[in-house]
Amino acid sequence: MINFKTRMVSILLTFGIFFAYSCTTTEQASTNSPQQSVEQLLDRLNTIDEQLQRSPNNSDLLIKKADLLSEIAQKTDPPSQREIYYRNIRDIADNGISSQSGIKRLDEIIRSSWSLEQGEGVRLLQQENNGADRELNQKIVAHLSNAITVNPDSLVTYSLLANTHYRSGSYEQAIQALNDALAVHGDDQPDIREKLAYLYLESGNIETAINRYENLSSEYPDRPQIKHGLANAYMLNGDHESATIILNELIEKYPGRIEYKESLASELYFTFRRDINALINRNDDIVQSDVDPMLTQLTEIDSLYNEIDETVPLSDEHAYRKAAYLKNSALLLAELSQKTELESVIQKRSELLERSLELWERLSENNPDNINYIRNLHNIYLELDMNEEAESLKRSYNL
Image (tube, rainbow, N blue to C red):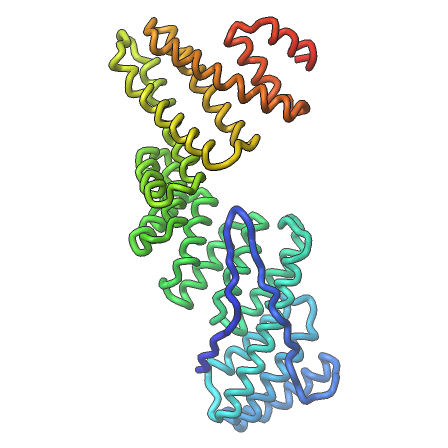
């Protein structure tokens, strides 16, 4: 068996955000035969097969056959019909060639065929396409599948194939492509395994995703993106306590990464919302000791948002998330205040609304065509009994 290993620049595949592709050089398979039609090439192939029946281990004949198979494949359209020829080349390689010169020549044929198919797949991937063009996706899949058939040792091709399936929403096929890669290359492939864990998460198989992320996190504790993936999986599974633990660990180790702080702020808000709803639904009296833990949670969230504000300029996107948190928390406290007259609850609600007002005014001023911002500002005016401002906004935007 020929252990042909591809040497090329690795391709980074980041699921759910951006995809990067390598501009692989495409090589035409060299052949000593003159330009002939597919029918003529098939006739020559039949002649070689007859000769191989009499001399099945003849290296020269096997190389000639592989060369013809590669040339026939390149002249066959659509690319989905080429697999049988590449499979035959792979069979020749797997069965082995006796001469060293034959091994070298077969390596060249395999490399050239693989490069041509993958290069064409990458070229099509780089076209303007969001994954919705079904015909184009089928061509890309065919080219990349051909590349894998002729050279299953190329790990990058599996990633590209999974990428193509992912972009078209075919999660199961993307998962299968990465599992095939692991079957060939073994489990010592953390990047592939991480992508696979993410795909399970994207496809809704959260328990499997958690299991895979937990295993990866245990094996590769110094990879923060794996821990963040695990935190995301816990979030989607409703396990906010476990997600909070992971995010606190990440913030302690990487205090400058605001994405971890934003995620933790969201998790703490989920916990706050759950706890305050449980308190609202209680039938007994609510006392200060019941409320204190929730006010502490709000203080922790505020602290995280303040740290983010100090790290990066307050973008509209960040301002919106912060404004929404302040408004929603205030509304929950307003609902709680209907069951208790605790001054701490009333004061905190007013404080959150005032802070939210400043942000909604800024967002509305910067984005006067965003009716969502305008409606939120109108509601804040009403919550703060700023009725004249609310009425003016209502008239201006015909709310």
